[in-house]
Length: 165
View 1 (cartoon, rainbow, N blue to C red):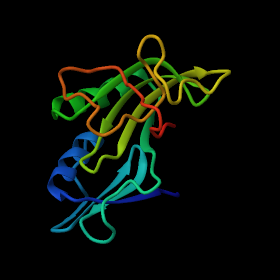
View 2 (cartoon, helix red, strand yellow; view 1 turned 180 degrees about the horizontal axis):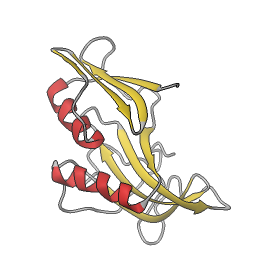
View 3 (cartoon, rainbow, N blue to C red; view 1 turned 180 degrees about the vertical axis):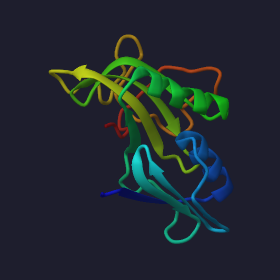
């Protein structure tokens, strides 16, 4: 078995542990004073954070995400984000990256955008990558600070020059 590994340098370990524990619905499997790791089975990933190493920054990371297989799994992630009072933004029936999907966006304490999404079908076009559509939905990782804190969930709004999927 192969497992994808991601390591993120964080400025506030405690806040990040709270964020990722809610996002993954699991506590870290390893917890140290400057490090935490989740060895997740669903999704299969070795995800680690630490306050060591490089200065916390996005450095080329546009966004990270969790793709689910059902509406129920997507609703479960949304409930965890709302239940933990984490920032969240909803996009329904959006066309992005040649797919039609429902999504929830969240921003971790470092400003890295996380996309939880359920792809419904393929799309013949890439979609709206840098500009909002008429209904305000867009295919784009929201900018830090643009994600509403629950219970108010707003549509994504992309700005020219922002990084999109």
